[in-house]
Image (cartoon, rainbow, N blue to C red; front, top):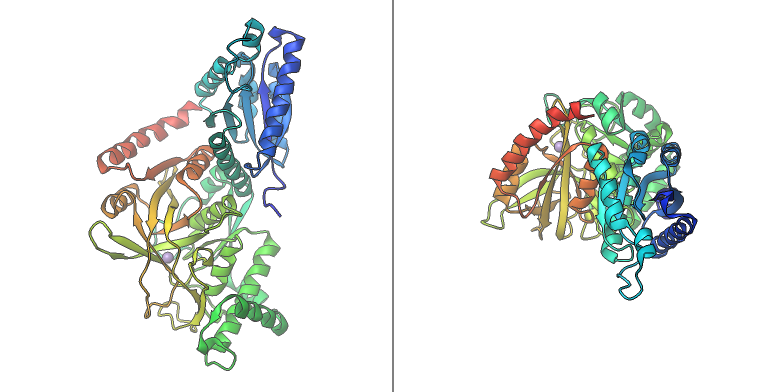
Length: 501
Ligand code: MN
């Protein structure tokens, strides 16, 4: 099933009645053809629904109010076929709470040089109609994505497709319950933040549950259900000798399966989309749930370690955006550095919790001691990760606002780590390790990130635009002098921004 089957994007054409009935009919016919073309392109993940041409303030407002109230509608595409005097859009735009994409296109691709007359000119006025519409959006400080290009051009479709995936993920985040077992790891600053502001601005509802509630669910898990899940492990992974039936750590695998079943039941019963654990809060559990967190991330549950609810939520959002894409995503942590000139890289890993979607091989299921947490030896999947480009992202709380930070990275081949039995990824931040890491540190970025091979910075820029939060991008063009300037300018912008609304 396509994960976006339940979603729609509405297409609303702007015009006016000045040009007579024939023009109205033509505008409608062209809009229908464009929408059919978009849907038949095979390039768009969400169905486009034509909601008609709007010719008056009353029609604009009614259409946008309907979009707000339709749960299937994750966003609205607007396009001005003729000139559409933009004062008629003001009240509707004041109402609209769904993401907006302004498509600057034209029905015909080329000018019909030999036949073009004044009737044609009156009908096909996107070139200036979309500027009038852009003006009122700028005047009202409305966040939106502007996509420019002919509607049949693959590059135009690609930009619309990106925005659609983000809009669907944005809708998903608007009723996201994040469950936390335990609090933050004591004294850690960067993973903490204002959960009230997060609900208001990002949509996340964050609830605490005592670990004892999970233990109660765990204690009801049947041996038959555990046996079924362990059989699944045996099919999907290479099983280490000590984890096989009769092996000395077999019981640890069984206990890991018990925890996984309990976690899934608990979250599903609450309708939660993301969760956090804390190695200091495991009373009644056999081991730190590593394997469970890894496998559940692969199924789209957001996860953050040590109480990191912002990373848990962002992982869920990035997984949601990238559904059906080939290379995968994961929660990761900057673990240790390998200085090596312009190949200097960061080894990304965690105590246990790295998503197997990013593995370059069939993961190995292993059990080893873990120095932290004071529990039994935990089961975990061990692997190295794919090579290629990707994005690492985080959201931090600066006290007066949320800031998203994105670093484009190049994942490179890792050496084997025979004495470090955890999953890992090895990457070189762009533009270089020195500049990338310095910029990340200046921006106040976390040691935890949500990472994806499939998404690009554009997805996260669209997300920040929908959320109305700050975004700082670290890419091949970043230099520290300009980056510091951006940070300082943003400081002023976001202080003033409160008074712009
Ligand atoms: Mn951590």
